[in-house]
Image (cartoon, rainbow, N blue to C red):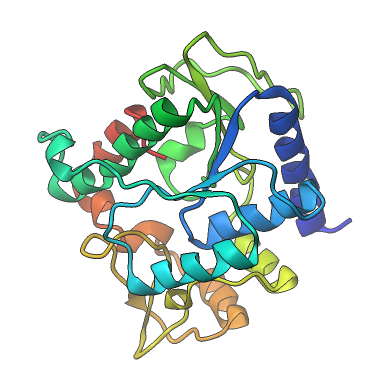
Length: 264
């Protein structure tokens, strides 16, 4: 078993544990590279058919290529998709910096979805290497009934012994990609031939390394037009993955504030 095989097996185990022990489960589908890897892992975990809804928290501000990808692949992959609109920016915390305030619409959208559909478990495609605050996460992470994440009070996790207990009214966030890296993700995409939004590949010397909404997500300088070229580029760079995310440059604590309030 190689490195990718081990990561795949661990993630499939997490999917099956979550499905077996959480009564109403949904999976976030951002349409980005990580969530498309989760789609493939879930298909493998459940013999091709994902037995719970996938949820696109739609701000109405995704790139056209992203919406085109959603319309094609939710049909090809036979997904039970929820694509509800997020609340307007007027409902977001006015004390947040501008880009973070816009991004927080997804937190509000998730709270709305939890209330509307009664999910008690949400699968999300975050990774520990992606951002410093996410390094504090657990594979199974309890959230308060308002979605708040108390990162100072997380359950201990030893090896594959996970605590799936959560208080009445709360829900669990499930993170099957937590131990993966960005390079792992691209190597798995290459191995499994997983489709991704074309914006990840360079055009005119620019490509997106992380996908978000128009106006708050920007491309990086790159000439990588193939997956092997992307992997080679990542092996050589010291720039953070989210360098093109405006919200990550708003203020020192803005991302942690968002995460504590329920952001993915």
